[in-house]
Length: 167
Length: 390
Image (cartoon, rainbow over all chains, first blue to last red; front, top):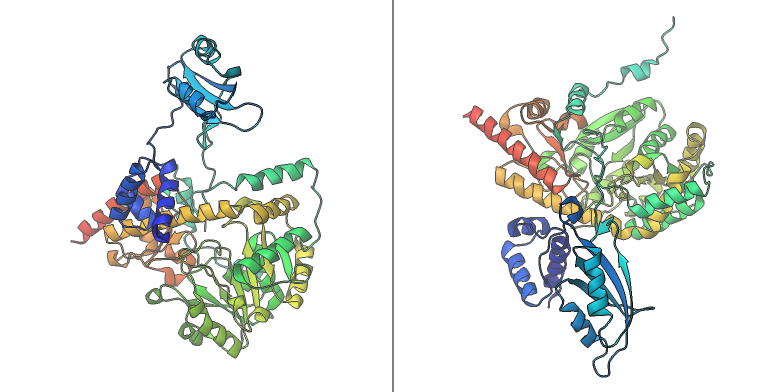
């Protein structure tokens, strides 16, 4: 890939990572590129699974919807030939599992999951997760408040205090 | 009772458009594109360092010239950025914003009657500071045709036997103009030929687009006749910390340090520690802000082209300087009507010198959302004016 194309791709990704709803024509203006080039690169990157989706960051706490999020540390025995992948797959296929990461340090997998209630999450951990072959132990942490998520501060920011007109 | 005021201060005219400013700053529901400072908060690393040094009780004066480690970092930074080496001990002074360096520099260089060439449109403090230092300000109007860059032809018209200093306000507030190396070379030759001194105000040096800032001090034979002024306000988004600096020949810095000592003592200690962190570890943050300004700059140029509003493409600072000459009214009239009828505040070009007549300064130190809203209103206004003209 030539350097210019690569640079454009990175600029596109950096921008849409924060503002995925932007209109392509406008994005092209901001990046000083041709709209057709931006559209092509985005389509290619979608195909190559560099762009994996366009999600929306929601503060569910501000809605009436009940939701609890838990971070679960999981220690497992890696399997011959397949390492951690098979057990990770067993976990990530559950729709209530939000994220699964292989982690360095004192445990192996970090599982993020969402449920309606504490009880629902606890039940999932005890019935599905702990009893899974190869799982040695789990530790569940419930999230009490999200201060910052996906690089975005969730607490309300103060208004700007700049004087409207200064030289 | 005696009049407490000096003739000098009374004779300095306040900005002619002060009334406009008062109205604009009082109008609560107006959208402003009139701000001369970044919309970004100071990078957190810098703020956190400021908090930490307060906790540690670093609340005493620093040496008059400023913290030695800050001066060392500044010299390393200038070496990297403009490729000029300064001695942190003998050739560097930390000031209260770049503004103090302008004031103190002029006081230390001017004798009564010495003339100072001030290219305009430009920032408003050069002229009064010259007067207070007993110098004679000489405005050098820059030409829109040259995209407000300074040329030797401009200088020739205004240089006399008494000319001592040339102010170089680039990247420029309010026009966004920059001077490339090719633009600077003939100016530097002219300066040497006429044995002038340069005060180069490079406060916007971090904010150039598509090209690196070039300091006139980096041209052959110019280091010894240039005072480079810079600071943390714009590039590092640290306006309220009031921290600037200047570098130049030892003899000048020595005298400036003397005056600074008597007038100021030292720049704020807390700000100085915070700035050390900024110079050491915030290159990424500064670059991200620059990129964001660049995107907004492109957006504005694109929108102006679409509206048919005449504007040269500026490559520095965070201002665009569109022409409103087609509407046949003064800048102040245009700005006043825009404020009253569409509730958008911009600064009339004449705030920066008479030759700014027919232009507006529009700042893009705003979020894209704010810019869109304001430009929508500006477009309405322009449509209305064009209809009136029919």
